[in-house]
Length: 445
Length: 162
Ligand code: FES
Ligand SMILES: [Fe+2]
Image (cartoon, rainbow over all chains, first blue to last red; front, top):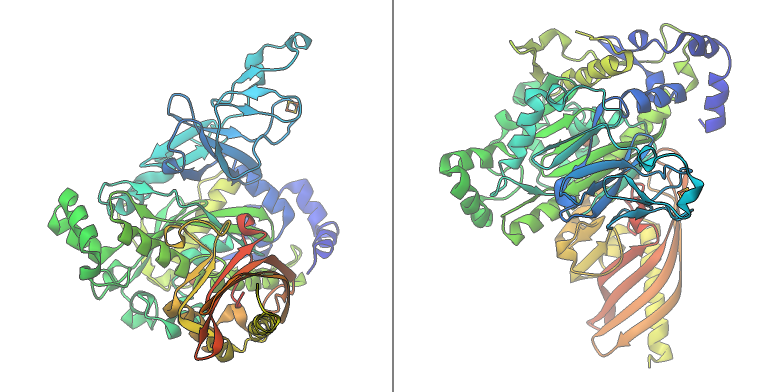
């Protein structure tokens, strides 16, 4: 369906009512299903960009990308173009990439190093903290300069180099957002580095997909599809997914976990049949890495880490910890998004090991990879399916997406963590519970 | 100076390689490769050491064989059906030619139809750099490096042979 069709659909009939009454998300996100319109309605998209990416916390980038003062990278948070920059004091600022004079974008390259940002329109000059430093012919202004700085994220948090921002500053503290699980998942990955630190400085690769952004939290944390969508990968290479994610329910002991707050994991750990399965090598091949790691954490823990591997987890709303890859889910339009990834590099590991991670990343992620290409095509097919005329607001019975798999066998522990067989839609439901909270500003459970 | 005969031979090789790729003649295409073949599509310019960078595609001979095998499984969703596609090659410059080895640069534009999903016509402009070697009298490709005009901008699925 082309864009004009979508627009004309929304400009007639029941959607007029919708505009008056606001979108009732509680009607559209039910426990066992969600409505397909959430994946293509432009009004929904516009509200998400505000409710989730302005009012909530989102992942921006990693401190290792901007090691020196003045280093910056440009990022997209929903509709907002932002600059993540290391300031003169060594702290990290997240600034609006929009001149406070008449709105000109300040940075158009992906990254750089500057001692200030200068707008090319009338040469206003901003410090790395976003404060307005100088304007040409200043006697034309009676306003104080302090009022004319760049917009800055209201809150910025740095956990082990992972930089999160909340643009409007009203979202509550980062602890509340990440919760114990968010911290534990990041810890689990970082602890595998010999130094305890990651380096995410190899650059980000954009995979442009004609789907709604929310289809990626879904597929990144979906254990049900692996044997089908990735059958060609499984048939042409030796992959650890054969052990942990492919096969009938009975042979799977992996878990789909919903930690709450939209943080999700496909926990492969119980299924691994040998150490280093996640890397596809034997210990002899990574002896230097093992020695470096065990020097810091001891042999026992290092042995365990070789078995367990890095987490396969999604942190709401846009960060995928994809084992040895990190990805950002970047919305562009209702039916357009970018899955942007970089390779995990362990600081303190030998070059050969980190190069292995680069090659593993190239095989798994991105436009020419063996794996996420088939996720991309699947997301595009879902998009094509749900954007059809059947998904009109008018009908109570049409246009739903079923997410009920495994509801009857989910376990809930004393902390409210839900888990089930890895092929169950526990993770998908977890995403949508959090989504509903963010969009309706009410607690869902 | 490249002889007219060699130039013709090189051009015919490049056109054949292009057609095999366009038509998903995978075995024929693979037969053009040497055992050391290196296939590289960086996420930027063609510079620096490929092994130290994160690329769109960086295949040694083993991995390109896997790539072809994956396409041959009949289960490669992102190429079911195969993209109808045609590429045009031009501006062929032969950089150096001695007995064993020839370096060639050429511009290309690929027109690809995303028949697997949206039906979008996708245009892939760039430069290809080839290293050709003579093996038992015939030209073979020991490297194909691609610099996309859009290298910095992210890509749609690139699951054909570029
Ligand atoms: S718009 Fe930036 S200085 Fe005028
Ligand atoms: Fe997948």
